[in-house]
Image (cartoon, rainbow, N blue to C red; front, top):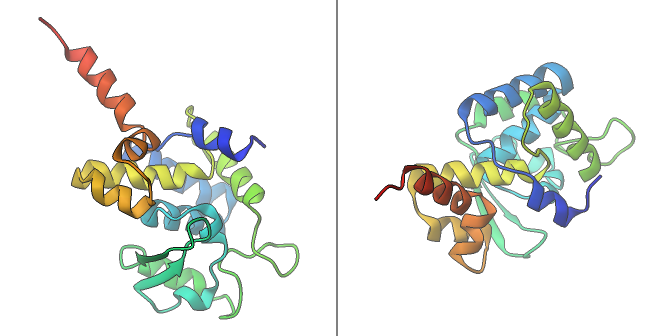
Length: 188
């Protein structure tokens, strides 16, 4: 597996709704419901994979809004689950309340970051996604689509706890994309 820093630089957001649907289909069909829900929660909350993997069923069961303490920044973060509530409710129905939300099939722990990475790579390969896919794909996809929908880099910077708007735009690949699009249409 690539180093964490390399993975962050090399993965890209999924920039089309078709690719997101392909990834969801691949995760559901070729991986597992657990992996599909991990991806669904990741692209709809923007949480880091480490924060997702620390969730327990009791943390989210029956809730449409949850406040967690982020592992990296130690800051509280409120996430809203209303847009994925029904699928989450169906998923947790068969899990014990004290269980990990993303349990490993081996033992009493959640899946590891490495396992999450492997499953996303597998699903990306199955969906013929050519750009780099990894655990940060979920967070970057959330950021990309949040920016495209609201055009509010300051809000996204706050959500991600980034130090500067340029960091946020670079992270989600917007600066690159905008420059490329501007240069393609530039004419004197």
